[in-house]
Length: 107
Length: 107
DNA sequence: TCATTACGCAACCTCCTGGTTGCGATTAGA
DNA sequence: TCTAATCGCAACCAGGAGGTTGCGTAATGA
Image (tube, chains in turn cyan, yellow, green, brown):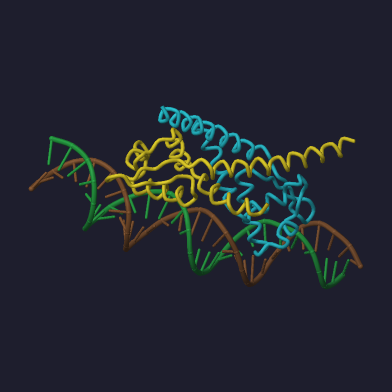
């Protein structure tokens, strides 16, 4: 299942930053948010926020639509769900393996 | 739940690389593996592999014990399980939100 | 119409990442 | 004992990440 890794690695990389997790949390109401709206209260420039949003967009976890003078961002649940499934499969694998190891040691 | 984000972000960052996912996959049998063993077949130097293993170790997803002349690495399931839980909580949140949005639109 | 708002693009900076090579130290085994 | 295996440390490099500033442009609304 190496293709799952190739698909999920960029998603994990996108999730590997507290600022981006905060942005995703702000987007988790499912609604559209503009950049200034998302940047409000964060300790960095609007351009900094824009860069993080581009990272999230390249990883496919958000989408962007221009409406009037603002860029509205929305969360895209599916890639993150795929990444979660990848983690579930992987952890099931080593949980089983560790259980078997423990069993074979205990007896 | 911002503390969960702070705890999980480094784990996600560690998972955000195909080489490291491959290393974790090789470690997912729950057994101890030496560096040369883990590096076998990968298209990079032993030192390159060592650096990736250090990243995984700093993120807490593997542990390392020196035995004789080799360094044996083992997977540590708990931090990854925590990251998976973080993803589950987050996705449940936006799945609900999106469902409510859809419902309020359809009627 | 005109000021304000929201944005994109580009340049620039610093620091980290991912990778290499070289070398020395320790352990294992014939 | 002597050679081979395994590793760690340090230096080095190119490129990307994360962040800033400056500036130009399009949309909004009074």
